[in-house]
Image 1: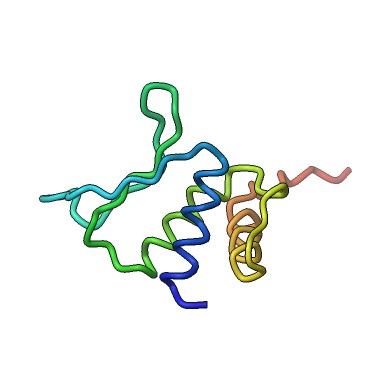
Image 2: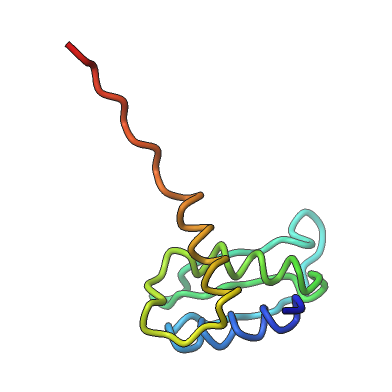
Length: 99
């Protein structure tokens, strides 16, 4: 899939999860950045309008990996990317002392 197609699939998934995706013009230190936040009690992903499609997809994968997407139809490549991000974000097991 092309980055634009991945981004579109993730935007649709975000909408089904109740997560608003917004593209804003960002300047200064905020240019090219963005991420997941909660505004007035609602989840929102805000991104710089000039962010390339591949970076948009990566940002949406990062943001949506914390949500339960099992009940959503997602293309296999998108589902795999979300699963990989979840594994990456999973806390490392706490080592135990052996006696």
